[in-house]
Length: 131
Image 1 (cartoon, rainbow, N blue to C red):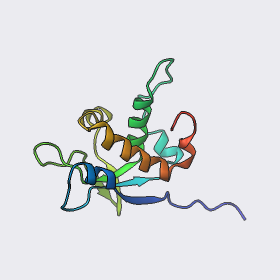
Image 2: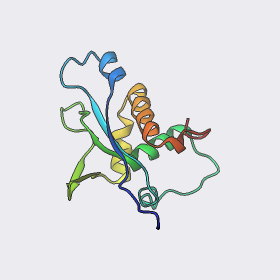
Image 3: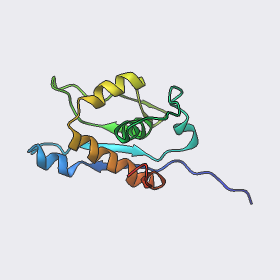
């Protein structure tokens, strides 16, 4: 019998360290991460192999490819990241440049905690380059 593919894993995570560090006593800060598939990995048509790149850039790309929900707000109280829902599935609704600008607003500790959640769902990314 041939292999039957299953839907990618989707998992919600509270950002507990973020809430503690920023004294959030209201609704918990959360992200939803989708397990990467080949199709998700190929979304980034602009990504090119480079001789020089930073680990922080790799983290941003990995989050961009897998983030499907987040309730972080910008300084004006608007959602930092935009999402769309289609057929019961959520996806990021931002260009890579829009995402890069939003991601750039994050303090390093919040970006790190989000990326850690990406690695929890995408264990194969946690090797030497992904850690």
